[in-house]
Amino acid sequence: MSSTAFYESLSALERTYWHKLAELFQLVNPQKPEKGIQALISRARKASAENQSSLADELETMFQAAKERTLRRVKLLSRCQLP
Image 1 (cartoon, rainbow, N blue to C red):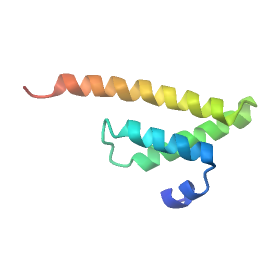
Image 2: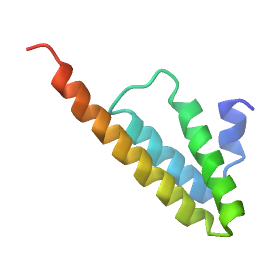
Image 3: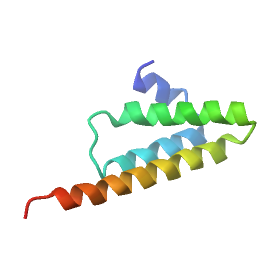
Image 4: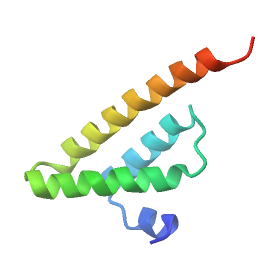
């Protein structure tokens, strides 16, 4: 499914997280952020169904994990910059 079609299929809650993740990912400027965001939202949906938990909780869990990984990467990249 294309990123556009996937985005159009999202609920309002999922779109909120799409935008939060897109803003977060701008810190590291990935080549295909839409693909990563799509994967995270899909994983949150799957986890919600498997764990019988709310989608909101799973989206927040995915967001927080992505935030930690992204901030670690920003820190690492800042150490690698030339003086």
